[in-house]
Length: 124
Length: 124
DNA sequence: ACAATATATGAGCAAATGTTCATGTATTTA
DNA sequence: TAAATACATGAACATTTGCTCATATATTGT
Image (cartoon, rainbow over all chains, first blue to last red; front, side):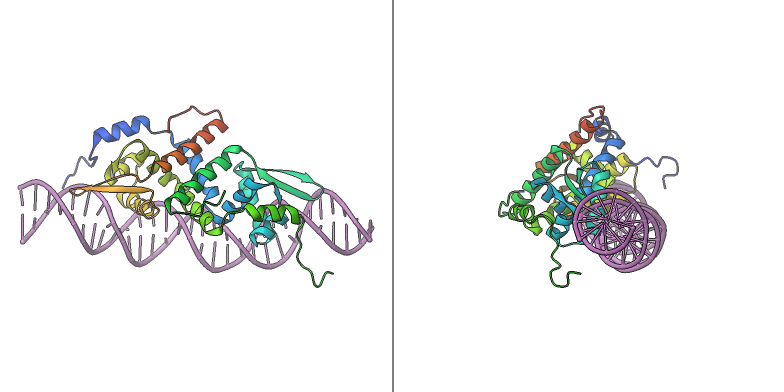
């Protein structure tokens, strides 16, 4: 029974090297928050749609066959995560992707998934 | 009171165009499942570490300051999502990223986050 | 064979998440 | 001004998630 030294690291060398090159916790946390937004199929479909064209809440609801409320809640999250922007025309609010990177990241992941299992190469 | 037609689509033209180019639901679902794996800071840190070097459960637990059990549970999820692979040497199990794409996707998102708010450009 | 070690896993639990429902706000039209 | 429309949002609720704890399995060393 080791009563004093409970430090139980198998490979100190590996650990040292990884610690050296490991990024700060804060940016990793932010990246995971960004991915979290992609990580729900409703939001993923919204992003996918907005990657094609600017849309209003009503059209998104019709496209995804969901209530306006559900869409609106999700858009609020995407807005907070700075992934979508909007412009108001009268009482209609048009949403679009806030940054080209958002579409790129989604497209890269889509390609990965399609390559993984001989997909039908649908354009994303 | 419209009693018959409850179809309430604002922009039929936009909707038609988006429907035309929208990918199937199944692959979008898979992409969101993939992103879900990135969308937790513990898993994001694991992926980040394995992007640097192959590691065993014990070392990962030490690096991230978490229990072996927690790490093991997360590795099981990553394994199921085909994001990590492993090799056994005696009773030690070394994990590494299963596909180069995984690292690419993470790196791209990391870059996006760092560019967004003048980060310290830590290599991911 | 037995103890120690490295990892895996099921159950339980608190916290987070996504939807619905009801209601509020802003804008347009009659 | 009043009704209708497009959207936003708080509360409630069921589901999912991620951790801990206990226990199981496999491998090594004595």
